[in-house]
Length: 185
Image 1 (cartoon, helix red, strand yellow):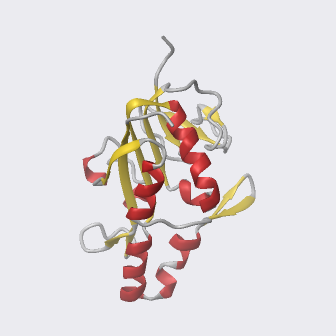
Image 2 (cartoon, helix red, strand yellow):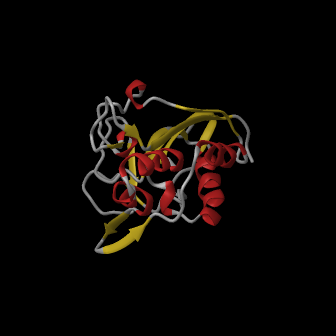
């Protein structure tokens, strides 16, 4: 039997003990340097748990099926996936409450990787992300509360609020969704 993993895909600088960090950046804490849409270094059904916080939106909607299919390939049946992406419905509410300048960054997201800028290419609401996951054999798709997770003590984008860091009264602008893999596609 091969080793099983808990994967932190597109981890950036977020290091969660017990997870295997996968990212395209080169850094000492990265265990596997790879694009998260190519997990060929892992066998089929080798991961028990996948966490991907604010990485899926960097793929165009037309690429999302390929990305989720690859993540489903490495996740074992019964395994859990947690995905966090900017929440389009929450961003709409934040736009109405606080104006356009508060939502442009989360909506279009710009980040530099090895000196090159990359941008968000799509947005999701719960129904669109649920549909994507269901097409690839995931079931029991539901929102999760970041406060009730193993990674709650590691402040990443799943804890994004407007106004910034107002975790008591602000609008959570991260769509945090979990699902269980039930079938192979």
